[in-house]
Length: 464
Image (tube, rainbow, N blue to C red; front, side):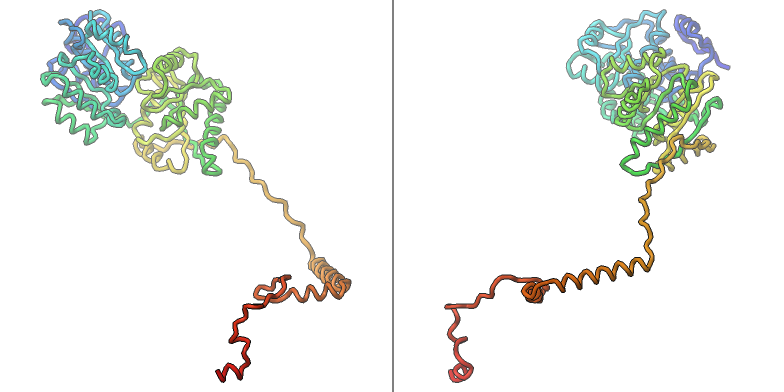
């Protein structure tokens, strides 16, 4: 088995790896580090959780150990799709470069431009950034990319999903043609393939088999739920979620709830807090300081439930998570494995429960096809309310109906018998007409305006 000592890394980097408690590299690390140290471009195809952050930070630190950065001209650039993932890369850099004198700057949204400008002005060896904030600094004239020697693109498939590909292409055009590029993606969509063919030169391709199975220590379950009415689906689904949380009791020490949409993340977190649950959300509209505070609280154990989307949860590394709840079945089957992999780590036991509505049946079938097993069904903890039936009208006998009809006829005959002659005449005279309606208005003739030919007799009209 390959060891880190076999990879020709800087001795100070190896010391940091040993202190971090690592001995053997993962498959993506063993495949990517040697060609990266040779200065070749690298195309790594691997999912999050396979150790690919170290596969580019370790050779990058070794290659940059000699040299010095100049003001506003970083020597290397790492692009990440989200703030959380960028922050995680920065933490990894601090861990592995603590014995090497290299500087870094983290450029992400939600943080003051002034603080970031001060770091860039001093000169940094490693610049870790999200595409939007990086271009903001460039357009303000605070940053030059002509000194970039190594460029890393992490989670390229997520960049595609978030619409960052045009920004990535522009950043590539701003860096030197002679740069070394390390490019990582979980999948190779046609657009990603086009970019790699355009901007990478003879890359070493390292592909790690896609993780298609979940850990055996994770207990999986699905609750199939159908709302009583379409407009009540959201509220009733949240009620099912609360019941599932309650059913776990003290076994749920902490948990992550995944939603497919950012709006549902916010609504779900607010609903849980309303009902007294210790929950908080992370999404793109929050200030970065608030997002960092929320994630730190969850890592430290002071926050019990975290509600997140797949993108916002990128870079979240919590060793011990007891439960994962899929409020929505993920649209991509691979994301299911990634989500539930947040629990049951390092041999620990974990539980993953998914709520499936009828329109998610196809997505659930795709998940079961990927993991090659049927996920056990769990009974819905919320029992449907019985429908309220209208009280039945008491049945009447045929004799009672006949008596009622005869009684009504007698009342009508008596009412007509008691009427005065004038009333009878008025009632009978009001009948008739096209619609059988009364017309109390007097008939008005033509009066003085009677045409003269009408006044003539029939004989006179013939004679004339």
